Length: 216
Image (cartoon, rainbow, N blue to C red; front, top):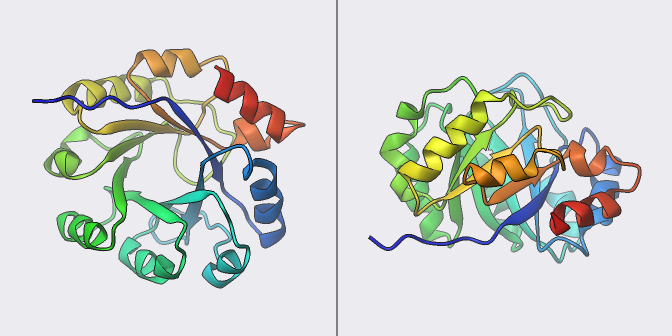
């Protein structure tokens, strides 16, 4: 079996409660990051909600590639709605959603989209195993889904390490609780794709914070 190698990548993750905040955060990183993640919550899978308006985002004429982190119970609905956004290159949804994951993965491939499955801290890896070889990325959440600024749950680093060893052909992503001081520990666990929200947007200068993460 040929094991794929992936470059380390910092992906700014925008979780905004209103359009103004979304625009401000996008403006801060759009010229520095080749890909930006948009976090989508509608209160159906997890309690929290976020701002997400397809028409408004389309009108922004974003140059960076986009990935969607769909923390929703019906991700297909959002994937269909976002087909008007040519910048969307990858969609990630949660294994906790009670849907036919294999069917949705195949549909996304037909649409030319890369796919990923996210797994919350308390969800056992057995849930994701049947689909792990079908997706490009497995995204480990280092915090409970829905809120930025939480402290990383240490046990999730072990989960990331297990995933990286078990499925070396998939990207091991990590989202939540990432800081400059723990980046090396996550990298050593096999993480190559780092989704950072408060570590960038909670800083006084988000551009400077992003560049520091990229240098690390």
